[in-house]
Image (cartoon, rainbow, N blue to C red; front, side, top):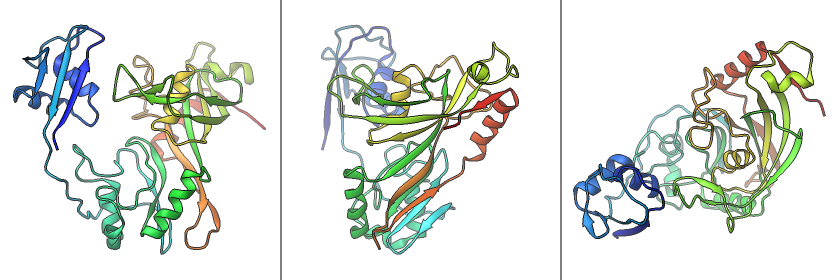
Length: 326
């Protein structure tokens, strides 16, 4: 079914192709350019070129024809399995892996790998997301649960809905985060200016994140330890974050909203500040606690930090750090 999207420009100067790609969910810039060339994007009722610079007040209408349906195929991709039984499989997902196929990511996803590992998973209800009950961002590593059959899927979905699943993330944030324990409670919704981003917005969905500081680095640790660190070095704080709700990009959005974005975050972070050796946002789903669908027994699993994040911390510690005791 064709999709028609109307956009009213609120900020001048951006190229039309970039503006459309930014504002329309799941639309790449190359596909936006293709739609413009095909005359499916109109500005104030007329045809425009991809290079057209949008102006405040412009009405941009995007017509998106239906695409060919995706087919999810098994792929023999190695998996780091943290736990598995007859009903579920818990995988330590590497950074860079997309959870399920979508336009632009048709292969190489966690679902493609799971289907090869568990062929019967294809019978679980759902087209592109068989067995998936929660997600991790592409560049977030760590633990994720996949259900092998409908009964297990329903059991897990009820736990997530009732907020009975414990999730703990390890994150490195920019700055000296205080206090050492805290709660970020702010509603999250779609960013009204940049539709591919989330933001703290009035009228958004309830969102709550609890955190505790684990370690201070650089200038941040100076007040918590001896004089080993350079007072002028950039401060960072290692935290454990426990989201009590499951909003899209919740941990990233919440810390950015209080002025402490995740180190290396290309969307919500400080664009001009990059931590040497950090190839992605510093976010890892370390702990996952839930009740097994097979027995209703509560278990808690932990995944160690991957090498790319561990190396960054080791380098920061060589420059000086201070751990926080509770």
